[in-house]
Image 1: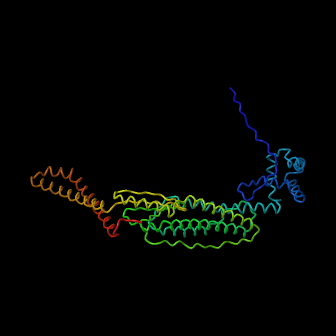
Image 2: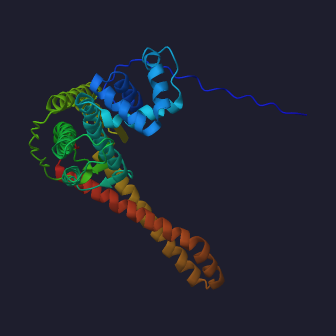
Image 3: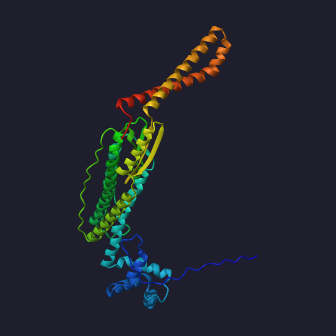
Length: 396
């Protein structure tokens, strides 16, 4: 049985005029070259004609000349061969205005590419979640990020239209924008700290836990070990003053980045629940549970501008803690007494076989229970001493 194959033919291409946004990444360079070909002035057309005849012959040029107006008006399809010929020759005959427009695309998209490359590398650096007991780790991260920003280089340029000075402008503007974003992140972190640190200092309960998670750096700071204030850096950096032919375009792009930063800040402020009012409500609830004189536990999560604060507090009234200490002490004494009484009786009645069996079966379990209760007694005693030293049930 014969098999029949059907092939879908490629649709014919008809040229049409397009509007180009040279600041967008969606720049259709091939179509831009075709448009420059059909919009070329008389002098440029004469140069193109000479080049075409020299490279493809007079008959090919006659075909080009015959179909030129039909192609330009979109009335006749442009074959792949003709389209590729035009696209390959046009970079040699671009006007200064065309080169300037390509330069806008190159200039802006090179800045975007530098920023995107930095952001991608930053995600790789902080790919693994880390926890630190040192609050100063935040400052170390800032220093590290500043160093990385200052060491970036331009990745590549697609077209050879920017001068060396303009390429330097691209790099300096990229660094400026990245420094702006880094500064903004640390201002948000500082605002979060200014809200919750005064409360963290006051929480004196032995069994409290507090962590602040900073998402951009995948870092969780353990606030249990916090002792001193953290000094955030006074972030200052100079803006690179560009004065080349793309300075107006650069200023507009920087302004657009500032608008995005401002808009993002407003959203984070609106979505933030890390403020004095919310923490006060949490602590009021804590006071009510404390007054009930029973064991309880409180957990709460506060979304900040730059991170998330998680607080967990175990409420253990002194009276109940004293009872727990006493019970742990009595249990420890009881287990020790049982162990030695049993050992004495087995030795006294010379039940050595039973003694060995008892040590293997019951002795190990009893010793383990003794260790557990002694450890519990020790921890509870330390906790009780800590509360007594403060002279009252912990409050904020």
